[in-house]
Image 1 (cartoon, rainbow, N blue to C red):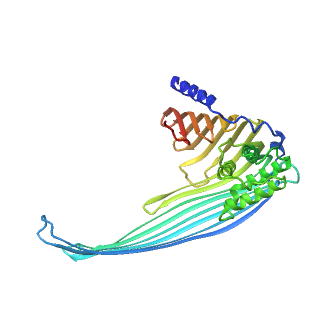
Image 2: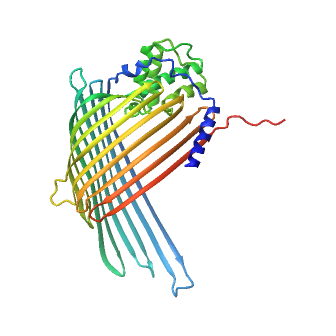
Image 3: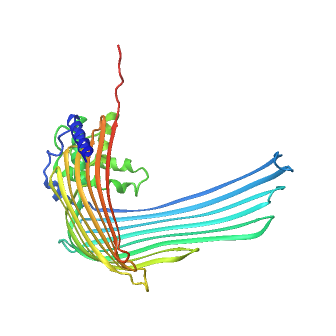
Length: 460
C-alpha cells in the first residue's frame, strides 16, 4: 500500500507539471446536457462477404538414410479447398420516443482436404477430411415510450448458436479404412419483456461538440463560441458517428461532409486547414474521455434463457431459466466536469428442466461511481462494483465478488499520455454442503507512460 501511495503522488506531481489545457468545458451552459435529444436515425445495411481458397501441392522425394536397410522413394500430394460465406444485416430506427435495433450475423464455411502419400517402402497413406462450421448471432431490442411521458415497455432477444462437424476418412497399407466423426453444438437463446420508467441518455456527444469548438479555436478556424443550435446539431452528428460505418464503406468521408454542412450554417469553414490542423480537429472523435450519461431509469423484466452444450463424445449439458429481473440506473452531471452514477440489479428464478443440476439461481449486482475531469483530457474515476450469486443445487453455494477501482488518466496530444489504475478485487466463495470456503484478496497496480518526441536535438 505504501508503494501505491507513493506512485500516485508521483503521478499527481507529473500531471501538475504537464501543460494540460484547462478550458473548453466552462464556456457552455450545463443545460446542454439535460436539453440534449436523441436524434432521429433510420439506418439499415446488408453485407455479403465470401471467400474461396484453393491450393494444392505435389512433391517427390528420394533418400537413402544410413539407419535403414532400404531406400525411401515417395510422392506426396495435397489438395485443400475452403469456401466461406458471411451475410450481415443491421437495422436501427431511433428517436426520442422509440428505439428499434436488429442485427443478424451468420458465417459458414466448408473445408475439404485430401492428402495422399505413395511410394516404395512407405505407408501408402490416404486421408480425406470434411469440415463444416456455422455461426449464427441475432440481437433484437425494441423500446417504446408511451405518449410524451417517461413510461416505456421493452422487448429483446439475444440468440447465438455454433455448429461444427468434421469427418475424417483415413487408410494405409497396414490397416483397414477408419472413420472419425465429431460434432458439437453451443446454443444460447434469451428473450425478455418488461416495462420501465425514466430516461437515460448518453451525452458524450455534447462533450465532443464542446471539445470540437475548443479545437477549432486552437487552429484559428473559430474566433467566437458557436451558436447553441450549432452545438446541439454537432452533438447529434457526433452521436451517430459510429453508425456511419454500418451504412457507408468510406464512413469518415460522409460523416465529415455532414459536419461541414452544420458548421457552414454558422459561418464556419474547414477549408484551408493544414494537415496538422485537420488531424487535430478530427481527433475529437477518438479522444479519451469519461462515458457521460444523464438520467434515471428503472425497469422490471421477465427473461427466458436456454443454453446447452452438446458434443458427440460427451452428454448434453443444458440449462433453462425463467428469471424475474428488476433494475435501476442513475447518472447525473454534477457540473460540466463531474458526474455520479449508480446501478442496481436483482434477478432470479428456477431451472424448469426436469432434474437439473442447478435448480435455482439468484443474482445481485450493484455499482457506485464518481468521475471527475480535472482539466480537459485529465480525469480521475473511482468505481465500486459488487456482485453476489446464489445457487440452489446439489451443492448449494454463494459467490461474492467486489471490485474497487481507482483510475487516473492524463491525455496530452503533443507529447505525453499517462494512465494509472489500482484495483482491489475481493472474492468469497462458499459451498455449504461441503463446508468449503475460498477467500481471495487481489491487488493490481498499473502505470503506463507514452512519450512522443517531436523535436530533434541540435548540437553546435
